[in-house]
Length: 251
Image 1 (cartoon, rainbow, N blue to C red):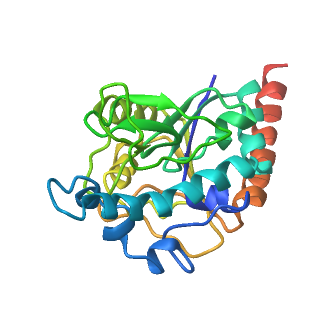
Image 2: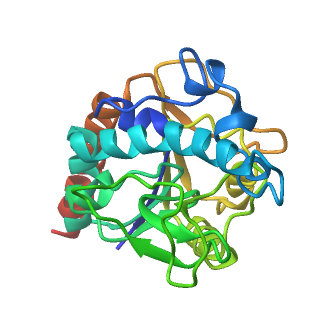
Image 3: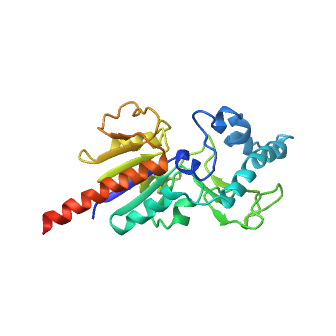
């Protein structure tokens, strides 16, 4: 069975109603990243304003978590899950929402953490399920080790957990088809994955805008100039034709 690896970014969940972070209208163009999403603002030592800085980060994060719970997977998420009937499908996502799993996908690698989980400040790799009725984190909420709870996401200045990165590398190196949806792939280390694709791997990029590969990557690709849902629908039709051709050749 052919292995398809989808690499999804914020553009994948935009059609579910979530904001994007980079590009036109992205949150990072409107907000100070160092204030709301930088490791140094959370791990602020004995600064007198440490809780104020942490509160600013939570004031940014808590509404996004509530929005994730309020919205639903879009048609693109469901189409990717449907492909598991015919292919071995792995999803590597930069997104923190759970829409791929909610849609039915069973093999999802979260590069940048999961927004619907909490973590310990003392041990960020130790995560806890959230209360989905009251999902907000407050200053003073403690993990089981006694440290302040924080979101189970990768802040700027933090590294992707090695076991997660290893899974992403292994999936990429074994891909027959690699599909990028809603991501510029210009952020490292994620961009390095494209340099690890097998030579015979088919690469598709679904994006309505002009695209470019990161420096050092020269893999040929097919550009599907559509939004996430329409682009995945278009790709699914191509894959369906491919399966029919293979089936006919076996008769």
